[in-house]
Each structure stands twice: as C-alpha cells, then as structure tokens.
Length: 295
Image 1 (cartoon, rainbow, N blue to C red):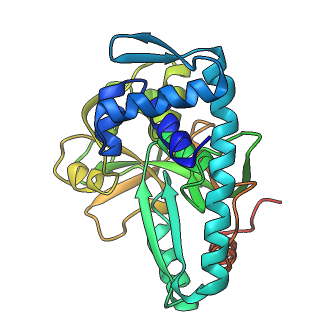
Image 2: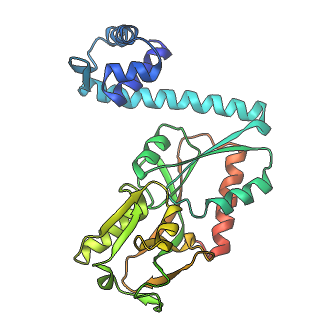
Image 3: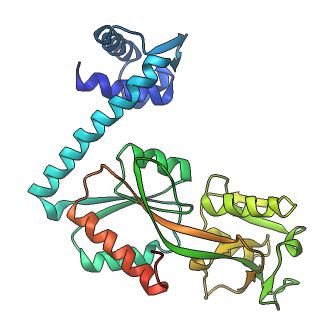
C-alpha cells in the first residue's frame, strides 16, 4: 500500500465523483481510477459502489476511511513537529474562525509576542471549520457555537451578548433595549445560514414564534454595519463586533437565549507547536481582559 493511494482515496471519498477528484488532484481520470483500483486490489475488497463517474463509499470504504484519515493525520503531525524542531522561527499558524469579531485584536497581541511567526486565517461556516479541524489542517479555531466531538478539545472563553443594530432614524433608535416580538415585522440583513450567529438568532426567533425576513444574506459580517447605516435593514450584531464609529444604534435584547458562546477549539491529537502554545495563551489573556473566563 502506497501513501499516494491513501491520498487519492481520501480525495475521492470526500468528493464521491471521479472526474471532480481528478481535477482537484491535477491528475488524469484514468490514472486516478487505476490508483484506486490497485488500492482495492491490495485490500481485497471494493471501497465504492459505482454508478458511472459517480461513486459512493460502501461499508468497507466507510470503515477504511476512518483509518486512512488517522494514518495521514499522524504523518502530517510528524512533519509539522519536525519543521518546528528544526526551524521554530519559520512556523506558520493555521487558524479558522466563525467568530471573527475579536480576531484583529487577538492577532495584534500575538504579533507583538511572536513578530516572526506567519499566520493564515480562514473565515468559514461551522461545518467547513469542523471538517478542516478534523483533517488536521488548522491549529486552532475561534468558533461560535462551541463544537462537541470526541476528537476536538473545546474551551468556552466568552459569553457574547447579541445586540440589534438599527439606523439612527429607525422607530426604535431612541430605545436602549427591545424584545424579539417587537422585531418580527422588520427587514433584516445578515450572513448566510451555516454561520454560528445566524443559526443561533434564527433558532431563537423561531422558538419565539416567527421567522426572520432577510433582504440580504452574505459572507462578510463586517458589511452588515454599512447596510444598516444605509437603512437596507436592521441586523443582529455580536457585542464584540459593535462598531462605535458607525452612525447607528445598538439595542440590548431582553429575551433570554440571545447570547453566543465563543470557544477555542483544537484537535486533541494535533501536534501543538511553540507558536500555537503562544497563540493559546494570547487568546485566554485577551478574553480575561474582557471579563472573567468561564472555568
């Protein structure tokens, strides 16, 4: 069994389509098919049920996938550990976030502590973040909500109240707080489904008896403030994302449940580099400065 066979198998297993997998791997479809065929011959069982170019993992494939992912995960951790030991000053920190509002201040503090460490940040949906975390592709995630999984370590570092942002001329602009029932007929701007704050607010409003009316759904939370200022709609904004420079009003929500948990996540088996240890400390110190952390 070859390492290349395992790498190809994981890609085909994730996409379940031979043409798309070949395109992703930058190899010909015939070469990919032969490699998967040799792997199945080595194992003595088929790993996929085939229907033309589409494939679906069978019971053998599902079982083998878990083992293959763990094997490649451990090899990648070994490579990262050796890179850190041989050239610690050239480490790269891989981060994924669904809760991005606190990130600029955290990265500023981290850069002061480790000015020579490179970092790469991805803004992802909750599911995308979990997938990358389980594959060992990121060191840490700042997530809302927290994630429960046997392979994921999670620390809730902050309870972040959700506010509602309205333009200055709005009928509620002179208020300091509001109930959800008073918002049921409003037009909203927000991020797409799959982001933690959106999923939380949708669920709480639904439990209160109404569905939010969105006139805009996007991928960039930072754009919502300008849309509220332009009176396109109102928006639910996490307290940590409050922009004091914006010409709008932030109202507290009186109903319970409009609070998001911000959690720091990492893979229990992932090698933690020196840079990653420092980032962990910076995150905890930052949220300690906002309030007492949850024990």
